[in-house]
Image 1 (cartoon, rainbow, N blue to C red):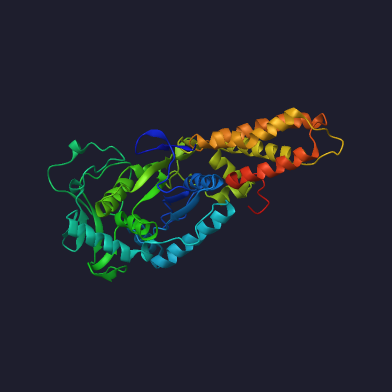
Image 2 (tube, rainbow, N blue to C red):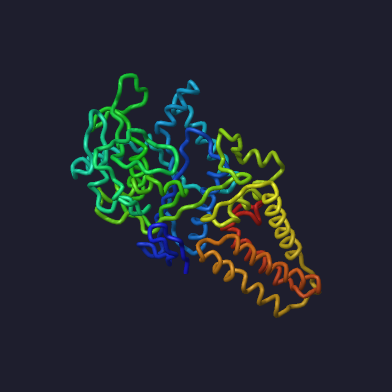
Length: 416
């Protein structure tokens, strides 16, 4: 049975969706005011592996990944570039879609945007106002976390820290891993000179970042899902805000499982503009690495552990992938004189069970790949002794293609 490390419980739990055979999953998509880097793609890739593995296990996955396109940062960046917000965000959205094709990230047919979900944001805010969780202040609308029982439960926030005096936080996002101990904004009321706004039932303005994900989730998946995913930074504020908004409206548990991935470092340091160490997929392509090697590197390390991108590490994992692909190529060319062998049969019979056992342990891609590598190395020894029959070669090809429906790095020149 698949087991996942649930951030909410801080335990590894057996996965059981609300409805047998069906999984509803939300994965935080990119904020498209700037192009995603390889650290962002690490998150998108382990989430892709999760979806593909669930489908490998015969679940029907209904997934939403979103584009955040009307937050404060997008507006500021568009002003800086002298462009319209939509012009800026459309360009970056297309870059993401192109990179997703390159890295074989499976995306839903439709990706909602904050700007296409304003109607649902307004509906949520209206309900929060009616229930007393939200209130108006001037033209803005704020959420009072003290009204929601269990606020901060994902992070396990100590509410004893909460200030006695009323504090309001008006910006969409704040830097760093910190908690804003006060009320968070849901609706930015219109101010003279604003270029981006909607006329709605709750007034003229625009939805804040804090209501945008809940709007897109509830509009396209409903109020209860099975899995919510994102980077570890989302544990600070963002995901607890989502819980507070959605559960305050529905009165029901929003997500059964919360999964979070760690950072990708570059030479031991976090990527940032100030350090000048931001790396994009095309940078690695220009260095001579293939898309399959980039994908493999980013999924090989366990998603809950920090990964340090160095040229040495990237080269080592690329070599390992190349060796495995070379073994498959040699093992799937057969000799008619080769004989059936019991050891080969046992090794082949164990390929898929070994893969599943490793993946069932919280998506341990590295262990799954290493076990496959070791089995192929043993089969290579038999091959050299003419002890790998034609039927074994055909079975090997079929089973590695099944495994690659999840990994997408072995038979990468073929359509999967």
